[in-house]
Length: 212
Image (cartoon, rainbow, N blue to C red; front, side, top):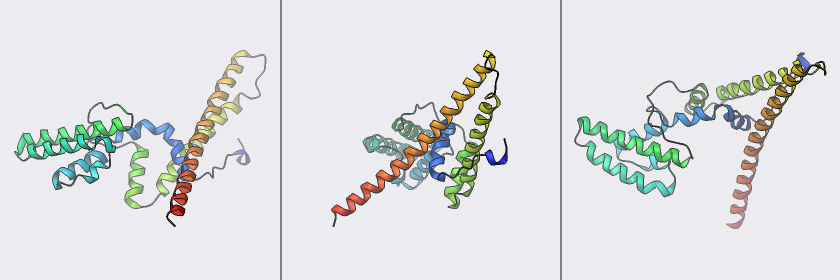
């Protein structure tokens, strides 16, 4: 492909971040059930300080009573120290992660060991810690660009096939369908993000107008 045919991606970074989640979605879900993930980290701090509000942010309002109950039980048992403290902490971690994932519509399969998170998750966490989006933008835009070019090139490689060659035709149609669906998923994800932002802005404007 010539340089002039290369695709220049200039859609908003946050919209494409939502789109690339189509590829990395399962990795993002898994981050919440690890022992060094953000949910357990907040749970550990809550048990140490007795402050539960940060933890409650991970669950839906209807699930607050279950989390409060588990928290109080864990706090009471952990005062015994030793093995009892470890068991109490793990009980609270597991309860919180299970309820959190249920709220997302995701299954709970147990707590996972601490370890290096997937590349996109590590980049996203780093961007929050540093307050800088550049690393995530580079990763996301690069992933989308590579995916589009790869699938586009597969289509173009079979575009000028011999129409009498059925095998070549099947390669073309397979590559075509894969490319079209990939573009469609990216566009829909980016579009839904933009629509959500517009609706949120409209609701905020409307609410502000009613207060005056």
